[in-house]
Length: 436
Image (spheres, rainbow, N blue to C red):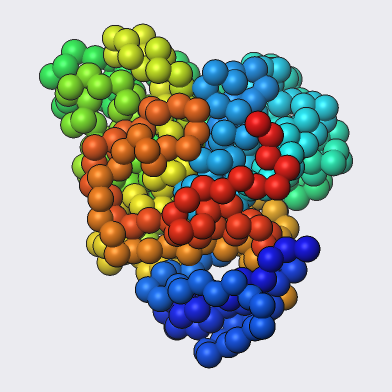
């Protein structure tokens, strides 16, 4: 039986102060001045209570790339960052393009126990873009896959993209597109602009992202299906999504924490921690995606947590792997970029980092309102501290964070996954059934 917890004096989504009692894995009571005999009392004064965070875009690397991350280590990193559910991208080995692989990932997540691990299925066999994967079989499997993506690769063939959109419509699925025209980005090393010109590095032009998004929103409108745009990064992309939504297209979009805060100026030192796909953009793009998230054009924040072993980053810029770890730092970065700037409230944070990701992914039991009877997947966040982000904050297998040495606000104090405490007073605990 789960332990009973009485959290006293929390700020419900940063607003009203109330006590919360968790019993039997659910929220048993919410209100002022509560008491419960035998409950473990936690002083939550000043802590912002959010529904457990949900990440629609996580790379857990297992099976096949366990040197970078495993489902266990990635789950631990997620819990440390306040997450209670993550969607695992399919670029594993073997690729998650069959019912067997997604069911294996689901089982490994259940064994780890820190968060709910919801597999994402590949759109095409082997993510090669040539023929559709077993979309229906993955949807009907025990994993009940509803999000499909070839992330890391663009579904560049318009006919295959159309067929995928048509197929998933039958079971309310969604295609999550990595918007990158492969021809326009051949050999690209960073954002195309003034900095790339000065450094002499091949540029990744904004139009390579924007042209695919423009094509795909028109395809989604034609088919009448759901489209999700991964890691949107340019001002032009924000405008296209804004236009599409006004037109009534069923499209959603995500932005990463690093695209909300970091710019291509950081590439000047050739520090490969800042090499990512899509690349860090201009300051104008950062301001545009912030505005897009604030006004609802961009629906969610997703980490694109992409771990790599040290040797994949400790090399020349052109040879380094793309990607950054982000689960442990995401909430703190959003706090700095969006809350401290007055662009989002804590209620908005609950929406873009919990409710909407769960809704887009059709993940039951997560992103639910903080009301009696709902599952106790909760995050208690202390907004007061400001301290340097360091390697001691990382709980995954890789350390390729762009925030090491950077001052960030806040700290996750408690995380509860379906009533089970995974983080207590800022310390990561062992979840029941966790693998060694």
